[in-house]
Each structure stands twice: as C-alpha cells, then as structure tokens.
Length: 280
Image (cartoon, rainbow, N blue to C red; front, side, top):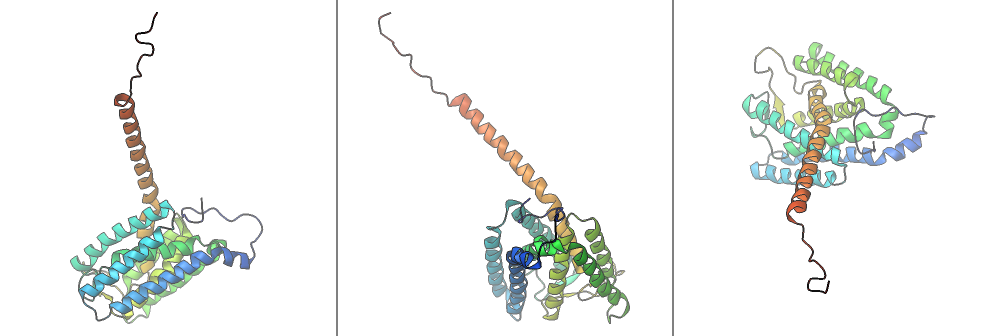
C-alpha cells in the first residue's frame, strides 16, 4: 500500500518516529488539505451576491482544480473521488431542490458543489493518510469523538435551535470511527466538513430547514454531526472503488483477449512455399 491510497491502514510498527520526521513526511498531504479548505471557502465568498453564470464560472474553475489534483493521485484515489462526486450529486439534487432539507441561495445546486464534494473528500483523505495523523490515530479518534459529542450534545440541550439530526449523525460518526475502513479518514472528514458547514451557513450559501420532510426530526443550521452524514459518502468511496477497479480491469482483460483472439484467427499470413519450381 502506498501513501497515496487509503483503506484499513496498517498500524505503525517499530520505535516511535520523531515528530520532526512525521511533520516532514506529512507536509505534502497537510499542505494539500490546507489548500483545499482555503479554496472552498474562497469560492463560497466569491459566490455571494452573484448570478447563475458567475456560479457556473466558479464551478468550471473548481472542476479544473479537482482534475488537476487528481492527475497526481493514484488510480484508486481517482475512482474514490469519482464515487463521492456521483453519490453526492444524487443526494444534492434529491435533498435540496426536491425535498428542501437544505436550500441554496438561488434555490438550485450551484455548479461548484459537485466538484466541491470531490475536493472535500480529497481534503479529508489527505488528512487521514498523513503519517502524523496515523501516528497519533488513537488520540485523534478519541478527540474527534469528544469534540463532536460535545457539539451534538449542545445541539439537543443548549442550542437556540433544536438539532436532533445532528445527534443522529454524531452516532453515525461514532460507528464510522469504530468500525469504518479507515478511522483517520473520518477524523479528517470531521474537521473539514464541520468547518465548511459552519462557514457555508454563516455566509448564507445554504441554509438548513428547521425540520426534516416528515416533520419529526429537528435540524440545526448546520447540523452538529454533519460529518457523520458525510461519512456515508466516504464509506461508499472506500468500499465501491476497489470493486469498480476490479470490474474495469476484468473488462479490459477480456477485451484485450478478444482482440488478440481475432488477430490470431483472422490475421495469420500464410508464408509462400519456398522452392516452388525448383528441381526435385
């Protein structure tokens, strides 16, 4: 397994690694995460007060950035990001324009949102695979559970707006941290998603409805445990990507074998018999 992939990461073995070495080894991933959590809020700020064509231009720029970053990633990571983008886009169009669980400023799904989900996942992935984060996995997992738990508890007790959905999603996050394929991936998702949810609702890019479509579950703005809901995207990416790659490789091998078979059957050239006309 390379440092550019994520799955059930092996525990670090051997003597403790000096902090300076961990920081140096993690520099590329942490810089990538820092750049992404800077880019997305910048897009949200540029979107304020703009029209649909400006949104589309911001969406084009976000797609270009995502594709440029993915060109440097391993194939498994590219497929994981693709799964997240597809899954998240379906969820966006279902829960925003259709069910209005949350509503964007122009009552649409902005063009920068689908690639933005890819950047969010890539940022969480970069944090989760960084050697520094992996070295302190247990402490960071426990800290994430405590922080999100305190936030979710505030949402159902002291918050001016009751947030039951956030508490439900916090329970999902606990399950992902305990049994998920990569606990550090969900640590990264907690910090990235919580930060962007707070920022996006604060600047008015989107707002959450007070109740779910059934009228039973109260929702905060934003839900406190939003990272637990987003964890389903991460889980889909980690589980589906290997199967998709395997299926694609199988199809390619069969096609290659079919082409070689056709060449073998119809492409043979019979050599002329040497010595025709010569004396016996």
